[in-house]
Length: 532
Image 1 (cartoon, helix red, strand yellow):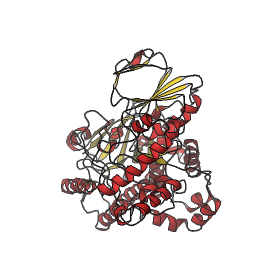
Image 2 (image 1 turned 60 degrees about the horizontal axis):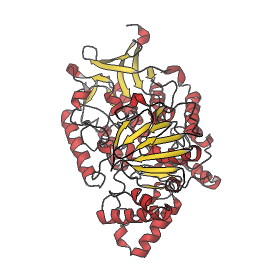
Image 3 (image 1 turned 120 degrees about the vertical axis):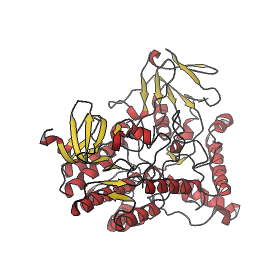
Image 4 (image 1 turned 90 degrees about the horizontal axis):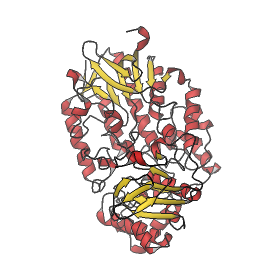
């Protein structure tokens, strides 16, 4: 193997985590290479270009905090950044820190094998190249592997079929078109109002109704920006003390929905509803834990849906009948209002499932729908999908797919027993998708890079999670999740959207407690890991 093919660190993925991991590796004086299957950097924000694509975390929180000049100088125009704005920001970061020279684009990692004789990872890509590295960091993203359902007749449709996570970079003109969109998750909720304004007709195929609250997007307030930037470090520190890793500028109330009378409860709900954003779920501190408080929250939102949607039958179809916040919470800009348009039709495929794609459109159990364009907003094989698409083999040739056959197991969401020097950024078993992803990513990247630095100082060759620590951690994640209502419905948190995927609650609720544990592990010389 040529010397140029050997690195200290190989990073898979050039999204938010991959870019920061490259920057930190360089600071340690390590040789590093990022392998990215996309044609350019950005990760999620390179691929997700569907109409209306926008982050649902406030701009001043959805940004890197590692460089003071960067966070002081960059200006965001709105409360919630659009996909093009985020991509521009990430490109600015890459240029500012000269990251592109160590990134290989349009290359897909197919396999990674740990070689016990050399204690190195051998990585094979789809262009036939092989690389070698001491450390392999998987920055592949938690929600990055699209879920395209297998439906009879997919190849027969006469028009184009798109997935929201693989939308054409040049965009799509919906003018004069009959469009069908399958799914009502976060991407669909953002896309539907925008497409409805452009298309001749839009048919929304809904399997289950979606809980959604208003985003209340607006231009940033210069006074608020100035206040935060005057003490950005303090703002970030307070941010990290929140269970979700974000403040949204409005701290949650620290009392139960049952501790106040009905009038006060409704007043607080209404106040938060008008403020918009995820702060609505901070109305009370037990919405995710107490069934009665949860029901009160759900009843309020159902009433709002019925007030907004003019057709009572459509309003009923759009009103969920499951626990609120047990699936990923969604923010919208005019989602429910869109169903008052004369060119929008809601179809219940929970009652009459899709039977086939025909040359003319979509056939359900009770009707045929003629369409010119079909869009699948069917989400992702979350948390594990991107990792398991790669043939990762650890000690004794053990495949990660086999190790995780019954569901993902690891320690701290960072390492898997039997796979030395392999790190997963925001992997299952960590807060990841239950938090501000920027905060979760920075914490993981910093922990991993600090760990590698610790090893270098002490001449350690390998680090590997112990089986005992891993089993204890998995039990802990299950125990914490079991205390919430998030395990009570079928969601992608449990892999329920992927046929045949083991039903395991994958993320860990509670960011501050998780960080405390990670810091404690490191302070004790990486307790729970075997260093050699």
